[in-house]
Length: 304
Image (cartoon, rainbow, N blue to C red):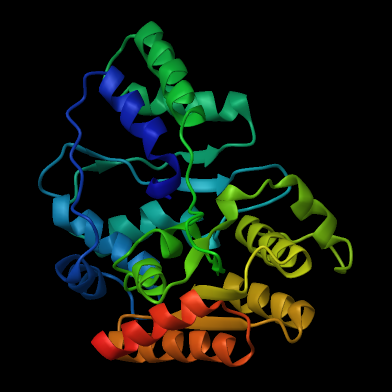
């Protein structure tokens, strides 16, 4: 979730004059560390997170573990987030002091309580913490996350949890791969969330999980309004939330081009490339792409 909220936390810590230690971007070494530290049954993002923690555990005095409970009322984040601090504490030895307090983003009062508790680890000045919090909120409000490749005539809707879509190591640079094939990308953040609400009505009940709600609403918006030529869902193998989300989406989009990429630490890049290329080839066979796309795709296959 760092991809979504890093302006807030970095600004807040910087305003408190804390020295910020960041792990490197996800890489093979971090993945190997995570696999070594984490239980086998965990999903790949959780294993990667363990690797990030292990890579800087001896370089800091305080480790901020985001026990994010919810972003909006009536919806919840992945349950693994709820137990993340305990997972880290029991899996990695010699870690510094870590944060355990839950984060409720749907309540200003509860969020301020979390911020105050975090700030107390750095300074005793409540006024300084409150000022830092205000600046952090402004920094977050000024930030926008999302991809919309407007220079491409045709696009693929890329769907998944933000840490799957925006971590290029996890998804093996899928955005660059698609661009090299002459196809643009659009992600959920660039579309207004308001139209998403109407998409839930045919369901038995409103989605319980925040990620399901966003992914389902985004895909239905794409399907009904044809904002893209196809959908690729990037999922972590073993993700319980995705197992529900994907089936809900598949049951609604019917014959609309839809590809699911399940990824874990054993997934090979060559296999990923083949599946993506086959998907684009299918779109060409359906005459869903322009001649420029076809030329770019053929050039990609030739150089590849």
